[in-house]
Every structure is written in structure tokens, then in C-alpha cells.
Amino acid sequence: MRYGVADYGINAWSGGMFDYEDRLVRLKEIGYEGTERITAFSEADAVNKAARVRRLGMGFATVRAPSDELTIQWAAAFGCDYVWINAKPTGYDLSTFCRQASIYAEACARWGLRAALHNHMGTCVESQDEVERFMEACPECTLVFDTAHLAAVGGDPEAVIRKYPGRIQVMHMKDWVETDPRAEKWHERGRFCELDGGNIGMDHAAIMKALRDTDFDGWMFVEQDTHLQDPFADLAGSRKRLADIQATLGT
Image (cartoon, rainbow, N blue to C red; front, side, top):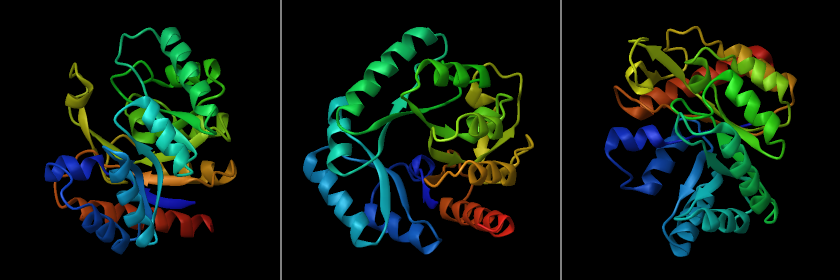
């Protein structure tokens, strides 16, 4: 298993990406081995960023290009295993989305890639039932599995891992603080936080055990969308928590 960061929350805290290499160095210093995605705006930008990652002895799992077609091509060129599928907003017909995801997965397969869905609150693949319906309807797809997005709506991340062994592409690990469960919009009901900083009873040790029991050996990305302090302090704490769990499990 490799440990990295899905760095959306760092961008949200700082206001953007201003020094790519400095970010990588700081993540490496606190125990991470890479980031999830290289976001690039041209072939030259993608090659430059990939070279910087490799020079530091780090890794990345996939890329994001200016279009879906280029994303697939660049991911294949860099030897990646998958590209993202972003679920459509709540209210979008799930059957239609599954059909479209399957077509996307077919295009990915022609380049030797998997199409992996990122489950997300506020989308048509939010709840436990929706995740499972997607997985049954799109057997060629895998998951960029976000534990807190599922747990925050009452889902059971451990059960999903055990039900779909081999189809968890990568993990997104974080926690959730619920502040106003009656709020209409999902992002007004609470905020994401560091591991074990939430109040919804997430059991990260049980999640890690389920991954071990199902022979998961991919990337585990800590992703904290909202930071109330220096993001690298939060990320260091979450990395330590994962190391402690791993030591307890004996893996």
C-alpha cells in the first residue's frame, strides 16, 4: 500500500497552486509518497510535473487534462492504471449516468485503463444504495472510494470494501464533522476534517482491516477538503494515524 495526498484541500486553503515542487517536498517530509493527480494544461506541463515527481522519488496515480479524451491519452502515456469519472449532480438519472460511465469505461479500456468513479455527496452516486447500484450496473468500472462522503450520508464504507473486493481502485481517507444535519445543501451540513477528528463515528481501523482482508494494495490518499489550520499539520496528523493503525494491524 502506498500513502499519498489528494491535495484539493491544500489549494482551497492557500488559494491555488503556486509552487508544485515545494508542495511535493513538504508532503514527502511528513511521510507521503506522492499525490493522486497531476493536473496539467499542456503536454509539456504534464511531462514537466511528472519529471519533478519522479526526481523526488515520489509517485502519482493518474492525470487530469483539459478534456476527457486527453486525460485518457495522457494517463496511458504515463503508465497510469485509471482515470476519474465524476458523478453528475443530484437529480441526474442514475441509469443514464451508468450508461455514459460504461461508454467512458470502454474508451478507457482501449488504452489499457480503468474508469474509476469518485462517489460524492450532492451527486447521483451519493448513498450506499446508489454506490451499489452503480457498481452492479457498471461492472467494468472501479471506485475512487471516498469513505467520508459515504459515511456522512449514513453509508458503511467497510461493507462496500468487503462487497466489492478488487474493485476499489484507490482510497480517499478523511473524516466528517456534522454541524447542521438539517441544512439543505450537503456542504452546509458539516465539513471534512483530519482522521479521527469527526463526530459521526467513523472507524478507520475497521476500514483499514477490511482493505487488508480483501488484499487491497493500491494507493491510499488522505484528502481533507477543509482545513482550519496549516494543511500540512493536519496531513501529518492523519499520516501518523494511518501508521499507528497499520502497526496495530501488523501490516
